[in-house]
Image (cartoon, rainbow, N blue to C red; front, side, top):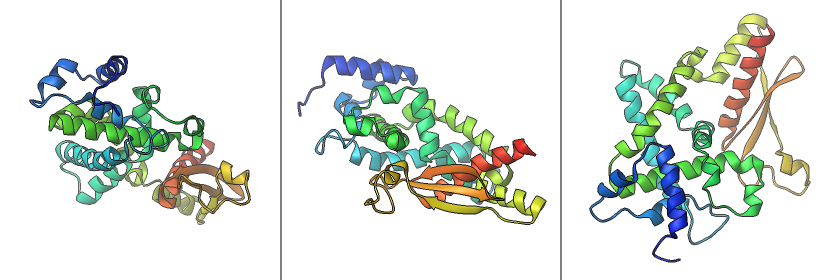
Length: 253
């Protein structure tokens, strides 16, 4: 891998960061050692494209950068809430679903370098975008050593999502909210069913979980499927399914 970045690629990355409200001059001025554009580039290279030059390690660091940024935001904006409430909020704000939505706002999919096979895997797209956004956060922090270059564009999104969560019963714990709804109205609980991914339906030889470790769950009530969710864990998939079911049931009643 060259130690310098292609000028065309750098111009693309500059445009991306400008979409996020980040000024190239300020970024480069913020690092006395020089701003490493290759690090930004690497943050947007999916492991399916290269086994040696990809965003795996940056995504690992970015997970911590994200959690710290969100924790500080919550402590500053919602410091009157209990630690339990803050933890519940954070678990949703750092989820793949939330990150992928933010990534889509900045059209991150246009800048991620990925293999053709992974590009066409719609089921894995959300995880791919979430990982790339985390890796980008790591690259920005390593380059600047300043969370301001992340929080300046991340905080407004966190505020929007947090306010939406606070408006939902049980503080965004959709499983609890759905349970309270069905138990309160009909004295019965919903049923969650693990289901194979679309890829597994096409092959009887696949293991219970697909290669991307994405779990799929349906939530049933009164012989009807009210919602389907996916996530990196069964718990996350259940929460997404419950959120959809809660919305559907609220509209139908």
